[in-house]
Length: 594
Image (cartoon, rainbow, N blue to C red; front, side, top):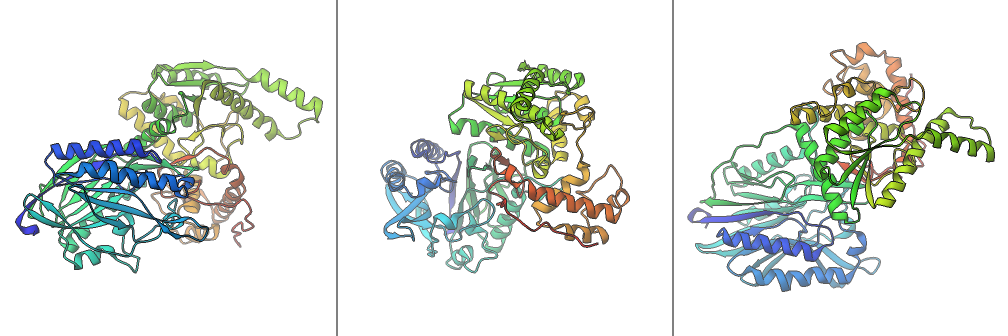
């Protein structure tokens, strides 16, 4: 039939909220109404659009929630499908079948609806169990691959409906795409909750490019159009805030890109096919730093709105690069009416740093508070030593300053019912260069998945975006420092340390692996860029061995801190939190023999 007819499909890229069946159903009904207005044959919504993705586990075992999600599907969504076909994600279940702990069996499902009838329920067949995905914990896999025909004004169209991982069949024994094509479907439709993954510096290897390459190859391989509808917005698993970037796609049967929806925003577009082809569209412009920055902006804004428990946002501002970038992101996410910034200097904070913090706040026209903490630190020290013993460790004295700041800011957060953002970057969090109950105190880690070099890259992007130095140039030139003692600077060569941390985390390499790479000169030069110098010129083999071993040891010994930190917005291929599941007890330190 595909060769004889036109087919108009509406891609409804909505932003569902986990657990908000009523609110999500309103978005779905609005999308159906718009698709009817646009005279479409079919409208498609994301994976688990009705229930929301990344659900609280309590909802999966709550029969009332499961029933309500299906009731709304049948009583509210289904009646709206007169004169149009609808594909929408929800949670299906079977009350007659029980799991090992007596819970009802559940399915990640798509409903195909038309003319007030439920035509088909598709159960997701391939269940991911990697990174923060845990579908196998909650769902039973489907096994049926049955095409479904819908009616259009020009006749029947045969569809193969896939749910996210079903499209990524390579590596699985069960291959839904292939089975659909063998049955002669006219179109492949896949509904998704696919997260954002940023590209590495200088590369085009982020998730958006992986999706595009796969869809193009599948369309060409099977000779049918492939439509990919993604969700947009944030969800969380308690320790990670996961970004869904939208950017839904469609490819015609020749492998041409014929639709790209907006990134990090709700969008609805119509794709009009004639004989399985459509008008091609260009690839959207790509700017790595802009993309990651906009993802973080959406992350802060959507997290704030969806939690619904905060009245404003608080940000500490030290005059350093981390808090400068955090402030820029928070400003763009919340606006100046909902954001206030705080500088809490001790005797070790330089006048230059305080001036730069004030200047940045003025550049963004933010309400700015200065709260000197030295008297409080001194009083706490006196009381501690009076009741206990003289403080023996300089680190204890340094951390007291950070903890006084944390105490003040959490008191302000409590009193104002405000969300406090934290400023630690991935490199510092990895190596424990943060203070528990001090600068780690807060409700959301905005830059916790950015390496220190990426913090600088995104801060430079901020100034490019604004066309002026909203972040003062002196901040870029000032050596990084926690400013907890006299003349202190951060004890890391970030150009080497940050990529080493990434190799440990994202690639799973050990110190031995990295020393072998160093010895054989196989370290990735794109990651180890030392201002034009080779890392092999900067370090001897023995120095590199000692550095790798020391960092790996610090990484393992800081787990107990990380597990108590604020949830981290994820922008990379592996982030601390439930994306990288660590244990506090770990006796292996990756020793390297000389």
